[in-house]
Each structure stands twice: as structure tokens, then as C-alpha cells.
Image (cartoon, rainbow, N blue to C red; front, side, top):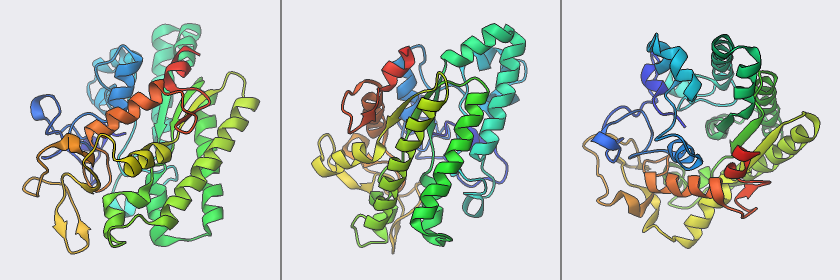
Length: 322
């Protein structure tokens, strides 16, 4: 859930630092969020308390120099739009992005600085009581769909094994509370529908559901084998499909609010393309990402819902207090 990391990455084309991104953000500012306003990370931390919006990108803190040491005690956002769980995902499409492996290495730098600032025991306590929110995997699936180097079953195994490595590395550095957001129904996003005559792509959605089931088993196993490991798993597939099916709260759950019209359907969101009049009527902001309203609804569900179809075994609010 990039809040501006890619603005600071050289040779990266996966950027949202231009209109109409941020049209509903305070000051109508295009911050790098792939949204008309706030994204899911922003609302999650607002609802959990203590933040007006997501912590700053790690790279922004680094560039801030003397502000780095003070800033990291308030958290950091490492997300990079277009990146995947697997190293190398996104490079062909977007040039340079920050892979999950590199993000974990950046966290190691933050951890070292926190320990130096607070001392070992106090720093460890801060890291142990902090929450680590991860939303990753969509780009891995999108890249797999166009290349298919292995069977779908092997892809899910490989992706889950890679996720396990990253989570265990974070755990080894003191992380204990993991808020995991699984992959939404990519087969129903506007760009996928554009290649399928306006329909959802069932094969893609089947792969998404398989990944969620595999992530669920992984997290159950980790919580039973790693002391103090706690998690909350948000089912982004079920949450999004419930809206698509019911249309409750939205007038349009199919097309993007901001999108260039192309022969294939809908393309890039940029200044000058058709823009919907009421952004809150739309589930999708651009051809990939949810609108601010959809993100806020998702965040509220993750933080407080008791519905096991959407969040399990506990919600993010309970995880914070665990």
C-alpha cells in the first residue's frame, strides 16, 4: 500500500504522483498513493488510533536526514507499488521497484536504529508490540498469468514458501503481530474485465482463492510453531466480492472512475482522461486499485468485523491489543 515510496525510486514507472491521483486527498495532492485520496493503510492506522494517516515511506525518512531517527519511532511504510513477494516481479513492467526482500532489509536498518536509540530491551519491546501490516501478492499473480512458467498448483506453493521466508525474517528481527491482507479478486478488476468482454476472469479468481487458502495454512502453522507469533488474516477476496455481488454502497462496481478509454476497455489514469463525477459511487478508482471510499470500507472491516468470512482468527483491532 504505497504512500509515496515509488516517487523516490529512480527509473520507476509505477507512479501515482500526478493528477488525477490524490484529487480528494487533503490539498488535492498527488502523493504517490494509487487512490483518489487515502488508501487502506491510512484508514487502518487511523482506526487503530494515534495516526492521521500511514507513516511516511522509509525512503522519505532516509532522505529527511536528521528526521530519520525521530521519524522511525512513529513507524515507517516500506510498500512499493508494482512489487511482489518474489524478487524481480514488476521489473519488466515498471523498471525499478522495491521488492519485499529489499523492504525487509530496510526494516532491518530501522530495527538497528531503534535499538541504538532506545537500547536493546526497550527497542525489542517496541518492535514486539508494534503491528506489521502486509498487503502483497497481486503483482506476483498478474505476472504469472502472462508467463505461466509452472503449474498453478506449483505457483501457489512457491509463492507461499516465499511469503514464509519473509515472515520468518521479520519474526527473527522481533516482529510478532502480523496483519495480513490477502489478494483481492484480480479477475474482476477493470483491466481484467477489459480482456474478458466485461466479465470477471474465473481462472484468475480461482488462483487468488487458492493463494488465500495456502496463506491461511501457513499462518496457522507459524502461530503454532513460533512463540508469540500472532496474526490476523483479512480475506480481501470475500470482502470485495461481497460488494461486487450486492453493490451496496456503490453505483458502479465494474468500471474505473479514472481511466483512459482504449480499444481493450480502460487504461491509464492521468490528467485529461474521463473522470467520474462522484468518486464515492465507484468501487474502483483506476483499473487496478480501489477508490478511497472502498479502501475505507475495507479498513473498517479489517479493524472491527467479527465475520470469519472477512477476517480471522481475530480482527486487526484485537491483534493490536493482543
